[in-house]
Image 1 (tube, rainbow, N blue to C red):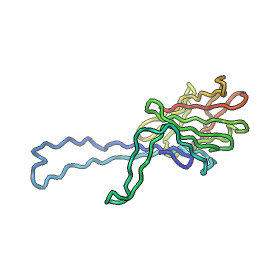
Image 2: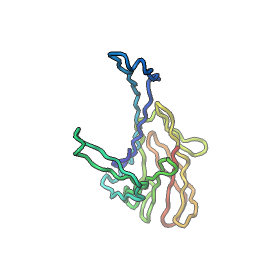
Image 3: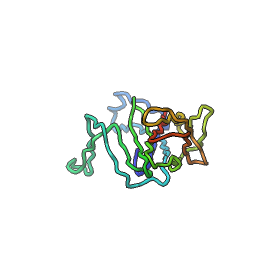
Length: 192
């Protein structure tokens, strides 16, 4: 889930494998199927000090929509359109946050415009059991149900010139450092 300057990851797994009942079992009087229970875990990645009122621009409208109903009659509710990309304008001063999907994977990047400071970008991880920067420069967040890895960030200027960059980890707060650059630049970590 995405909202209020944060990404909220929610993980679930069945506590035990439930076998499908046979047709004969289902026909027995008083049959009640065994219920599956789940363990849920959550990890929040919050942009520290982010503009909670950033203007959101939705782009690349998808062909489908989802309907959510707020009463049992099915008469009250909302239709929600799906978009492939959302840009939070000025999530930090002169910095935009772009979230999009690519090959079924959530991606995000920061576009630092003239006057923006990379040091303003700080991501606080809540709910992770551990965070570490790996030898290859990637970041791994360990959760009770697995790991999320962000590859070392690719940073480049608007003209495509690559800029050196890396993660900086201070407790559970992640930030970036970049080499010298001119003009606008894009910081692009990739999730897996």
